Image 1 (spheres, rainbow, N blue to C red):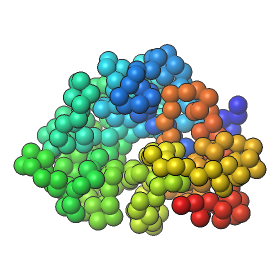
Image 2 (image 1 turned 90 degrees about the vertical axis):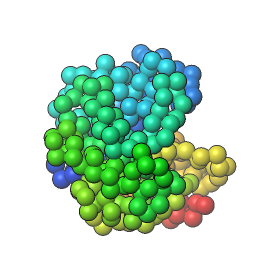
Image 3 (image 1 turned 30 degrees about the vertical axis):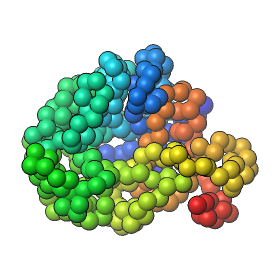
Image 4 (image 1 turned 180 degrees about the vertical axis):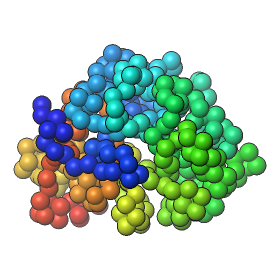
Length: 299
């Protein structure tokens, strides 16, 4: 299979100084296909990582809270890819708190956020993280305050990460699960180079965020991009367009996302080598105007 580098897949300059292929890889499914388990075979997950990098992926999204039992995404990345090749961009999220038994706790306040950054550095074996996202909660108000003295406001939590950036432990900062108002508030504290939000063909909850990122040249990194999230997925026109191109519906979904804006950087995750090959091939799939017009009316 030809690599996306060999096919000159489109690239993006993350933060103005980190060139990445626009098709990345999300590590959430490496420890387990579902977050509740069962655990994956570590050798299979390692093979998925190796294949992704072989095919030209140089942007991997991870988080310390991606784990199942003793198997973690960060651990798999380090064991499989360390020492890291030059130019490999590792992005990490902090914000949620997850207990060793897999249960979720209250969101992290400023002090806990700093501790989780240090934990991520240790787990990945790096002195500096290329990109760190602050993952916000869906029920936060415009100030980013979900309540509780230990939790803190958006300014306090993002400020804690900005301080680590000033120390040199983080190169770039991002926001996840954010609104345009929260993005603007964070930008008053430190530059935001990437936004990671729910987005896909069948779920486009807040197009204003993508519009803001496009105008400002901020990377827009969609998560759950291939999921229908429990909704019935209409067979058409997706199946018809996939048949016309001789590819999978998943490949059409990813190509559609990349066609929405030059700042879109999908990070589809999988625990299957064949699926990672199919996903990455979407980076060089061109959808014509007829394809995009048909997909524009998908509910």
